[in-house]
Length: 330
Image: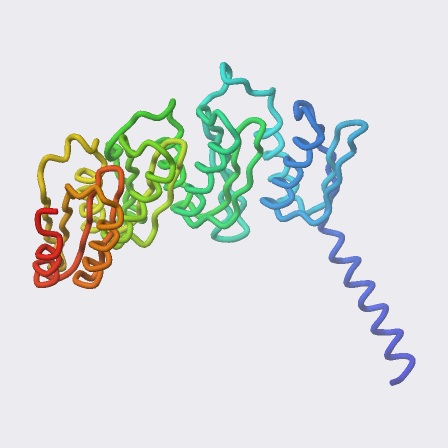
């Protein structure tokens, strides 16, 4: 290779890097309220990840954060610092609030919003709600700042609108609600993609609640379902007919065992499947296990829900008739 070609290529590369750096600026952001080093690092992680900033450093001594990025990125970083670096929150001063939408117009996922939870008593409760919202909305860029119970989300306008609805429904004062939330959300404005939140009132422990949620998802064909254990809440997203099956199942399964007087409940789905729930008198667990093995062989789907001693099945009319002959009056 010609020596002049190598020199020319090296000069060209250095010139390109210099031009690339000309669009960058450095901004120093003061950190006024973050109480601990962990808090400062969490804020830095949020800013770096949401604004996609490669160069960011924290000076613990003078409590500043330095960012080097494009003007658009540093503007977003400044806005995020203003939203996140606020006085410490206590249970008495916590507020259910959200920021305006910041339009970081670099791509379709460029809209950013900060949600601040008021009723997350523990970090686990806070993280459960955030996980349910992130998973159901399918927002990829979600980052938390634990101390003020704040979460920053960057996604499309439609995703953030759905996230706002879930935030309002889930950030409530304590548990104790039962049944469906009074609202539903049409994701994208279509009845073929609907979200509802259901609250279980009689499940008791977390294991029973998870068993209930799993049974409902499986029988109702719910592909997108996420739980918040501390609220006994299930976030379900599916076409309207499937959510109607889920609501029916929750109504007949989530009840005290003493109130299960009716031996059988039945529903016919939109696609012609039969869904039935039987309450068992049998109390011998070895016999119940044997019965469930036979019921699963007869029906397409069969699940046992312990707290109300119920068997939920779904299949054709013929399969249901065979399963009923197995269960009988047991």
